[in-house]
Amino acid sequence: MTEYHFKTPIKEEDIRKLHVEDVIYVSGTVITARDQAHRRAVQFHEEGKEIPVTFTGNVLYHCGPIVMKQDDSWSVVSAGPTTSTRMEYIEHKFIEYFRPRVIVGKGGMKEKTLEALSKYGAVYTIFPGGLGALAAKSIKRVVGVEWIDLGTPEALWILEVEEFGPLIVTMDTHRESIHKVIEKTTSENLNRILSKL
Amino acid sequence: MTTLSREQLVDALTRGIKLAVTSLPQDVKDAIKQAYERESNPVAKKILSSIIDNFTLSEKDGIPMCQDTGTITWFVKVGKDFPLIRELESILQEATRKATKVVPIRPNAVDPLTGKNSGDNTGRFIPWINWEIVDGDDLEITVLPKGGGSEYTSQLRMVSPGLGIKGIKEAVLKTIFEAGGKPCPPIIVGIGIGGGADIAMKLGKIALLRPLTLRHQNPKVAQLEEELFNELNSLGIGPMGLGGDTTVLGVNIEYAHRHPATLPVGIVTQCWAARKATLKITPNGEITVLSHNIPNIFSIKLLGE
Ligand code: SF4
Image (tube, rainbow over all chains, first blue to last red):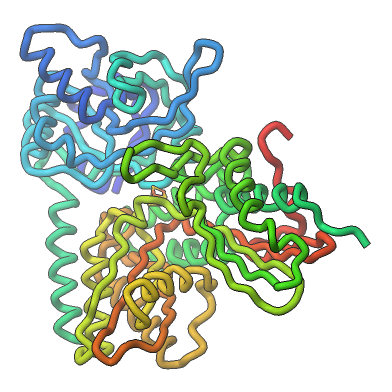
């Protein structure tokens, strides 16, 4: 386990150095996108249209934040991660088209994503669940919002963060996945314990 | 002698909700710190240390430790001569509504048919109130704001009575295995055994009210708690489901006699953000905080104070 502190834009070679169990902290630009933003972004790209934000080198956060508007400016009340598997069917295309370097979510992702991480140079990380106070502290400001017509949780929120983390690398560019390993070992453990009851 | 007014009680209970969502009870903090000391997996240790940073920060700054401030449940033990007993239900609703604005907490009460959020954490049967009417004139009250992620993985299992203790253990182990990283482990497991389907689930939740440092007074039950604690931790799910020695911080069991033909087991999963606050209130307005080591509930400040 090694700890890294990155500033966006993050270089592909830095990402390829990472291994599962490494911990990273990011300062710079984080952009949220969940189900609908993923679908629209991929569709736009395939129709040859531009999307209004740049993911390349930045952090893609699976998150539907709670936001507040006060005198025309937005602030984030809370921004915990949402379950990533809902994006599994489309994430490999998203990575290929937009090249985010770090994906943050919860619960882990599967084979197709793992393949795309390795091919295009990105990692999947977990922000531990329930750390609402820490997350709120590291989000410095809302830089902008796009696709607000999707509703506030589904919009693309562009956030400026400082030392956002700990982000735990659970899927790396070397095709390693902690989630796959844990699924296997916990089920073996369960069977062993049950057989001894 | 002064008597407690409605406004004072609403105010104290609102502060009680704020205390619960911003500051963990001492037993939970201690259990997380002990787990951190024991943990041998470096990733797990890192997660536990960030959980400690998070609850230290939330307590210091008076902000909710987790964005999901849960659904509010009240556990009421009220003396039948407590002066405000007739108004207590509406007082609890008012305190819940007020806390939504002045703590603030997230509105988490949704109509299951229309999907509409009431916006103030109240609604049909919500906040849920567990009533216990006892002799005397005091009020002892606990607020339990429980998050949705860890409620999601709770289960009722009907065990074949012939399987006995083994069947109970199997039910618990399978439930926690299936839950994996979803309820934000390390978790506390509240288990209700016996009674009926509804009673087992209710007892599972009531079991969560007992401090982690106290074992059940029945030695057989206490032994089952300890055995399950070790077995669940050897599943290796670990903090956030990424592996490690710490899957559970505690196992609390409650039980009731059962029908000969059924053995219900209610398994309630509670995330590390095991928030609750308990206050004892006398008719003349003396308020003691039983769950936390703070001398005065009015030292908890609300928004704008
Ligand atoms: S399970 Fe608990 S810690 Fe996790 S997000 Fe829900 S309330 Fe917060």
